[in-house]
Image 1 (cartoon, rainbow, N blue to C red):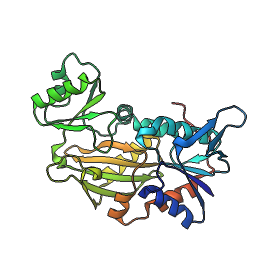
Image 2 (cartoon, rainbow, N blue to C red):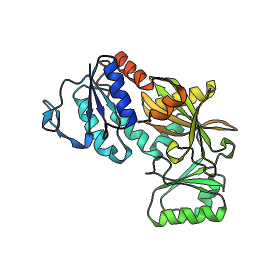
Image 3 (tube, one colour):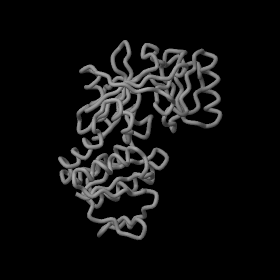
Image 4 (cartoon, rainbow, N blue to C red):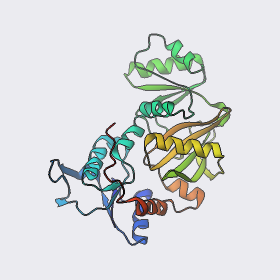
Length: 300
């Protein structure tokens, strides 16, 4: 097969591993920078051009679209979908997952456990917003933040009021969430492929830090998840419509709680922690599914 990898950087670990996995299985792999693509949008023969060449003959696309280029990256991916190219994750599912508020609303509709979350634009009563999520300590998140950036732990009522008012004063879109103290600064990343959790790791925050992101100095280790955690991770990926997803959850007194569903999860940490060939499993998924229901596009 001819498989395209939508990525801005061919040297990234995840991109390199996917490229290697394609070649090891005898497939042709092409790394494509979505920002350098341009499209001919018509009703007869839609096409995509890259460096003066018409991108044709692709059987599948693996989208590794950075959060900062979600809009244009998804537009390019939609064009591939219009050309009947199988995508590991469809553009609409990626768009859903990148909208933190929308993703939580979808998870809520499906009854998936999550921290109590408040959202507001210009609340008349900040105190009531804080009370809504159980009071301080609480977590304040920028909707546009990634890799732990724009996430603040407010440990007191006064700190919560000050941070919320500061963010709103800057016209930032924020979520306010209850703080799950019993999680102890750790979360679990479940890697879902084709409706199954194929790997899981525990991410522990560095000392003095509450964010467990590996980019923030957190550490990763192998973990055995419970049947309930497995079921929750699968339900979260399904709610987003993602075939490949990194589902982040917390262990709480009331069961697993979803923090985020990532449509372009990194491979380095999970492969190192588990020793599994995650990239190869993604290619296996393509081999089993490319060509099936290519026009199963959702217009939500």
